[in-house]
Length: 266
Ligand code: ADP
Image 1 (cartoon, rainbow, N blue to C red):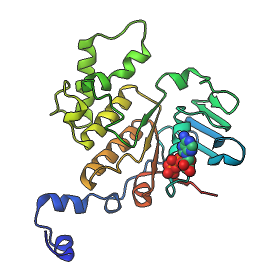
Image 2: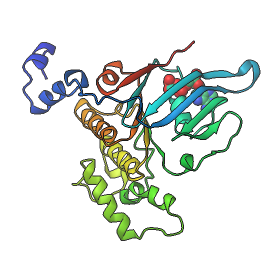
Image 3: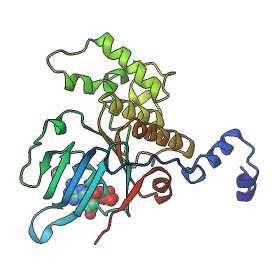
Image 4: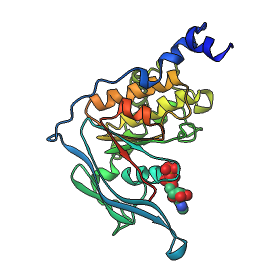
């Protein structure tokens, strides 16, 4: 408590000091240079998406061309309703476009001509999403070790990894996202929003994807927790993953991304 100027200029509580230091604008990132010879993990070509038919149709996404290379962080920025989340779902091959095609690792993954996923990559953890609402993106009935290692059961259906193996992998990845103090048996309801988001990041990392797509991943978090989540995404990019991150926060994207693509409404 205190006047605005007192709090901003002479913060008393240690956490207030941390909050003031946390926004990415005050920590300019060191960007890795992305060579134009680096592997292209994602190529979106002429993507459009219309919902509904004829005069009632809504054009949610218009003519998007986007290329993401290994190790690159690409931001998608724009006002509410411009189609960012829809575009991200299409890039993640969760939804099919009504125009254009998506290539993952050079293979045609989905296109307007079919409703099916066309490539092995699209089905096999090549791209992992991190959703806007981390709490509802986790299965509330499952202990978090099960959620974190879900991709392992999808990748190896004939030889399912044992429960013990999955638990030890979950411990390793929970440690990587800074959740080593959390028991792998807890359920999402016992965690904070920020902790649920870290679980969702751990789940994405376990799949060893080539691309992570994240929709407003820090919108529900305070500045300190948000900064730590952005550091995790940056580390993932430094380890060679491509990252696409949607946000309405231009400052955040400018501090984090190699490139920001602006989503236009018209
Ligand atoms: P943003 O993420 O930029 O806020 P969205 O991708 O959520 O934008 O939405 C873009 C437009 O598409 C909005 O007009 C929205 O109402 C519409 N839209 C999104 N999803 C659907 C859907 N499943 N059915 C119909 N319209 C949708």
